[in-house]
Amino acid sequence: MARRFSGLITSENPNPMYGGGRNGVGIDRIVIHHNATTKKNIAMSTWYTSSGNYTSAHYEVTPTEIIGCVEETYSAYHCGGTGSNDVPKMSNPNERSIGIENVNSTGAPSWSVDPRTVANTAKLVRDICDYYGIPCDRQHVLAHDEVTATACPGGLDVDEVVRLANGGSAATPVQPVAPTPKPAASNIPAGFTPESGTFVNGDTPIMNRVGAASFNAAQGGYLPAFASWKYDSWKRVGNYVMIHHVYNGAHVFLPVREGSVAWGTFK
Image (cartoon, rainbow, N blue to C red; front, side, top):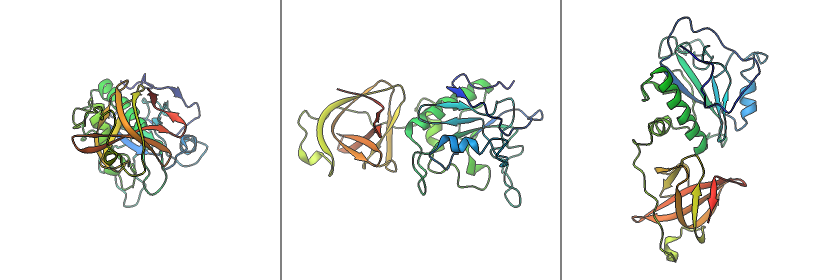
């Protein structure tokens, strides 16, 4: 039986949004989207019945929020195709699925999604799968572009969502280790400020990157919630701060701050 919302939501958007009946079709898929905007309220406003857009989603996810939008009892208008030659690749796409939208951390062309948003979506995916008995795999948790012709979900990696929803067991993490107390200057990447310290994570896992201080670099693994990560230097990368250490000869980078908001504490 469909419920109103997951117990994980932090709030409900009270504005009337587009939705329809499920027509007796059981829920057996989750479809992942990105907003194509860095403004959650702008994204959600396009789903209001006053907008005339005839689009919507069940949930809006941000780095700190899971917002209930269209109740699970109803189908949301999130992956039904646009008509003409855009024929969905599965039957009854809206009726059988739950749609999760994710706010972007950057605009075009990368349309990146904050790692904390990805982690929140993974938690929600796990909860939905458990409630409805949906296998938590890539055959049942789909990217929007796997259902209809679209560039959505932008820079969001649905494989990463599923890995994290399954406890991260499918990932091969690079375990954080302590750098030497006085790291050699050659170990500090160009542009990084030397500083020895320890970062203590907050309540959301963070993905580290290997080889380069970039969200496009290879994924190493997740720093678990409340875990510690020793570092030897730091650098501001766009709107983020990344810290660094060397592990088994590899340069490993961890985002720890967005703007003025730290994702944990330092000591």
